[in-house]
Length: 157
Image 1 (tube, rainbow, N blue to C red):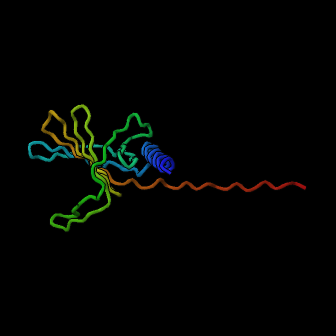
Image 2 (cartoon, one colour):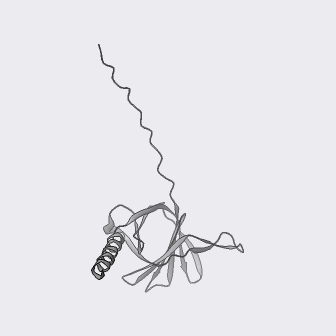
Image 3 (cartoon, one colour):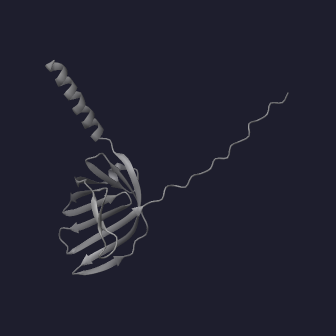
């Protein structure tokens, strides 16, 4: 009996660990704006729209500009109970489904805020007084391509 329970537990743990290694696509986002905050001033930064893809394994969020995972940035999820947001100044605070995650590489700290319809990355360089806020909106789904059906050839009799 004890052996059966131990085997069942190890099977469940193995399944969870194996499942945690697989990232699934959760959405594509288009960068719409970038702001630089320094010495109390907010300066817009010109940026071309850029498509970002988001993936998760339930523990981390991976953000990439391509399908190559080597060029992706990984963020560790620290909060997944929703995101508080205010649509207008003085408006009501609402909580929407989403996650918050962090990344620290080479002295640069990044905070990710991800909801169903937006992605915000706030970058805090370690040796600078500038903060960069990048905001992206959910990308529209790819347009459906209609496939013309070819008429079946008729058999000559």
